[in-house]
Amino acid sequence: MAEEIEFLAWSRMEEGAADLKRSLAAFQAIYPNIKVSLTIPAPGAMWEEIIRIVLYKQGADIGEVGSTYIESLKGMDALRPFAADEVLSFGGDKAFVKSMLEAGRDSDGRLWAIPWRTDSRVIFYRRDIFAKAGIDEADAFLTPAHMERTLQALQDSGVEMPLALATAAAQSLTLFTTCWVWGAGGDFVNLAGSEIVFNSPKAQQGFRDYFRLACYLAPSARGLGIIPSDRLFCEGKAAVTYTGTWLPDAIDQMGSPMIKENLGVALPPGVPIVGGTHLAVWKHSIRVSDSVKLIRFLTSKENLTGYPRSIVSPARLDMFDSDAFSSSIMYQVFIEAIKRGRAIPSLPLWAVVEDRLGRALLQIWEKIYSEPDVNVDDLIADSMNSLAMRLIPPRRPK
Image (tube, rainbow, N blue to C red; front, side):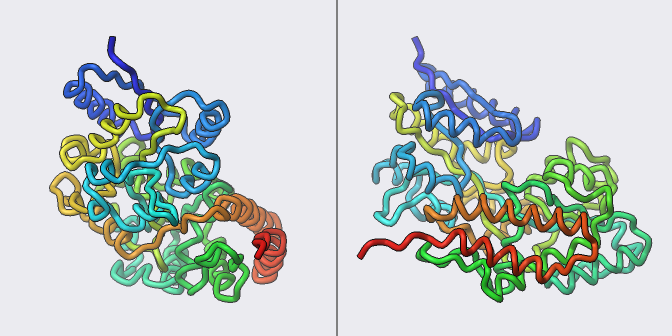
């Protein structure tokens, strides 16, 4: 009887899920004695599924986990570290994007998760609408000031919805503000994870740059989560959006040929964020050897070349110039974002910061929507200073 591995994967667009299933079928053809059971939770339900696995120590053998989750999961004693020879069998350290690799590694050098797919947040825009408004694409988003001028030009030319932006997803808002905060020279937590710095003058300047986008959000584009916001752009209602590198797949599902033909993509006006997912073996698994074989297969160049739609962009460096990915101009911008960008630091404090700061940012958006005349600068300062005081890390005993 074949042994079964349970694999918990992030939600995907229809074609991506189909390619992942084909990839798993190819693995099972190579290893006929290993059966793979795939579970893909609904969008937004992944963290709840992960918490169930951690609490009850049963369920999936392999988890596709977000890069910012790893430190928290390690702290919960939920993951099994990879042995040095296993890491070498995946290609070693030089095979993967450095920031993604470091997100899975602890201070002792142990690797707890293998990088699989990368993503970033970039600007998507309608080239046909830009042409009608006389906007030069080359410098439309170079800086926050350039982006504001571009959106103002769209608004002045009669575009009813210059911008679509996800502002109601508290769990993602911190990540969506990173390019503005980093671009202004600010940060969220110091490198040691011992000090909150998102209330510093530079960080607050970044938040002000971000929240100035509010005046370009039409009433019907306010208070939306990621999927509804993306849909506005996919359906041709918005001229610009700032979202993840998954959007082209969403356009394939929801957009018209006109949207696809006129799709432009640009780096964001700041420092791009580098995120993505890793593959990890849950500590409770009793099928460790087979799980490692599956992860080795899924992260291999051969598999990624054969089933490129299973992920949007790979974390393997030797795939960046592969014909399977590199033919698209959009992909080249994605890779440039990953090369120029930064990853969230792998710190125990980060999970708390991401959650609490996301809620605070959501409250600022709600205040702006309900009170259009509110002093946004004061609102940001009060919110950031208050939250920073509540999140002061405990002092370590000497």
